[in-house]
Image (cartoon, rainbow, N blue to C red; front, side, top):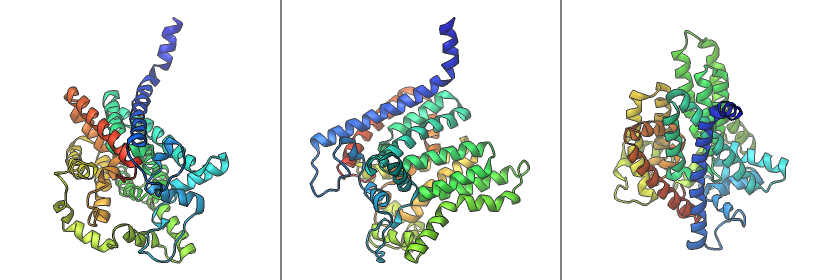
Length: 386
């Protein structure tokens, strides 16, 4: 009798146990990729290193900029043609800086701890969100596909994606409860973490308009807009006070894109020029991004008929934001797999399609896991940027 009572008591938590276990299995793949890269892939002494331990390999590329923000603060020489840390958003490195100050952790370890805790919590929150909407089976399939997705190494790396995914999923959880001010606050935090957060504003306004008969629309409109955009305008106020230019974070992007201006990238994207430069005959991570972009477009189209309108609107925004602002430059569709890692509706739709043939789901997860291992090894040796 006691055993049965204990089972009933803890049974509601078993699905979360499986969700966490699946994510941790994917982190084993990431760890194996780090071990492989350390043993078999060369690295030069000139490459920046955050620390001596094997897990410090997860601090590469953009992690170096976040490390410098966490240790030195923002710096700007006045020359927008030189790569500088003012283009990176503040929430993630400032959280790591605060954690290091309070706990005594080294800044590199604080960056990894914030990212990994946020990644785990994001998976748990996403499982809850999808489970409430579609049930346990689809929720588990969704977090499995997301956890083993090739760019999901960044859910453990010193990048903004883990924190961004957590804030986005929490936004949708409170939005479903029509807690609009709380959702706006989470959107403001998300846009303080990375530019993707701005996509949450039209989603919030759409849901507020749809439910205007149940909640006051006009009375909440201005406070929600102010809160949902607070992350970006507070950052701009800081840049204005420190460097005399509130838009320096946007102007500095040109240095990371071979000095192509935002206007030039936008015009190129509107003319659909990035599609003429797709690498569909290349199966390395850069070529995969082109295929993933086409897959994401198809999944958004399918999701239009299967998901909440706010979920589909969000997925469209996440895809369009980097397409309009970055893809028209020299990078093209490179990193689209990374940018859309936080677009959880894509994985919900893909899970629903693959569950119709579970053997296919298992095969896809196997292929994704192999690609995750490869991407981790390449990322750790600064060959693949994400």
